Length: 425
Ligand code: SF4
Image 1: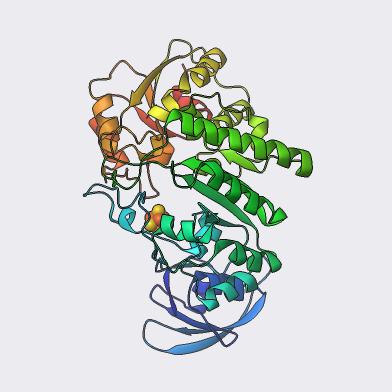
Image 2: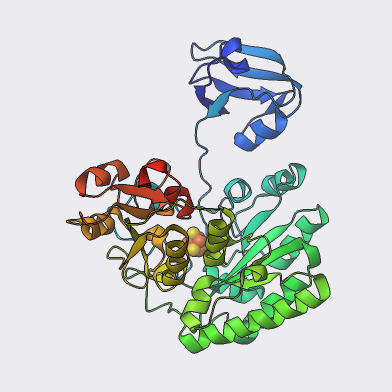
């Protein structure tokens, strides 16, 4: 059973009399267990929907809808599938107290993997889940592999019951399911020959594995540093070299590079980032793979930017992007005539080892902007704020804008904010 959270006005659902609180029970006689059932079973133009209205009355609706016209219901959020693993490097275990409640949920949910690109380990699948993935053709999915050796993978996941990942992927491959994979690199655990074997095993699955990302493990000050450590420069360099060898082979044999190191891997290895063409369609940009090049491409694709001579634009970011930002800002300065003032923030919530801008707390931005009345506008990374307008530490963005003496704008790629007419002279 799933429940309606909201009904769009003038929609089919509103015409039928569905209201918030209505329970959606069956479609064409098939029970609805979540949003996936609902979306896939109501995809046809005609279907029978059994619903129980908030007053308790159960009605079966014979629904016909023109192609493309949505039913007009928003469902209550699904119950998230919890993770059955206990990785030493688990980010959730490394969170301090007092953050947004949802951050403490260790999700491992193939449905969110399909819908939002969340990585899942596939270690908590029941036979019915496998059947649904195949029936609904949930592809591509994002899978955390870490190592293909079954025993080692169980050790990394701290889950003695984790099924073998390669046979699992092969079963899905037979049903046409494709995957983007990631390997979170732990030095002395799954790097070196283990990394080579994992890449080889994944490569042999042919087109089943669309891309692979190799990402160095990231720990916070609150992580279990006795159990895990971050790779040193030489270890990142060795991993980047392994990535390059496989990427060159894939390029020669398949026409695309297939495997990529995350930006963090190159930064930690003290190596230059590969050029944009290395990353293909930037399929794992949200996983920190090619995100800098992706940003540069978005800026270039935005076309001519407004002239902003005499303006001073503050740019606030984390240490990871901070190292690369001068080259981006130089380009922006040449294109607009504005002066860009870069502030690189240390993450005082998770500790200085967490360098990504998306994980910066609101209080860090607020502190950095206190007394900054010399800026015409300050640009903050939009990824640091969730859909409810809150930073990780629950600071509200709208409150922040009132707390500081300069205008503050969230921006994904600078071009979006610079195009705003109010920034112009
Ligand atoms: S798979 Fe590991 S890292 Fe991911 S949520 Fe589970 S325990 Fe944490």
